[in-house]
Length: 201
Image 1: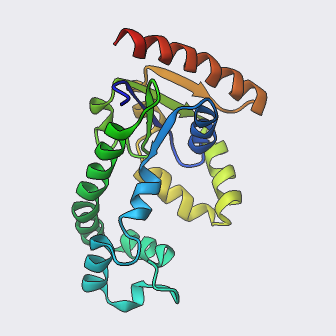
Image 2: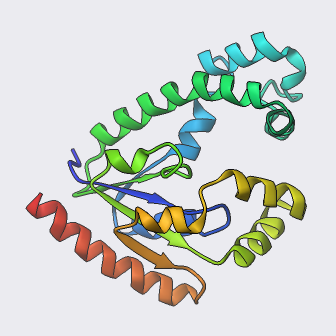
């Protein structure tokens, strides 16, 4: 069991997944809140059943899965719905994160949480690593990645914590504007640091 937990976060488009994948290649267990968030609304789950009961069958796609794009649109226009969803899903996600953290077997584990700052999750981990890029880079990468429009991505960015708020709680920062090789080297350095911190914890 990993008793030392490193929380990783960063704004949309910052490259959190790229960074956590590099840690995974070094043999570190990754608990990813985004993955868990999808699992708790998979077909036949309590989460999805509750959403369908509230919003009707139209919230499903042709395969019986949650239509995320439609839900995202509804949430943006209905703050009450966002609040209801958070109250439904956050406890389910938290429970799974705890379970997976307790089941991790690497010397330390990584808890990747997009809203680590917003939900005060940084208070529950041993160390906080923030993946940081400029807002211009966030916008450019996300629009390309999601084939989305600038307005929608800007709205998501405004709803997230600001760069300043994220950096204020960081123990470590990976600045991710450089080459892939630079990123690999930064992760390798932090890996050695986290191994030694986990050993002495």
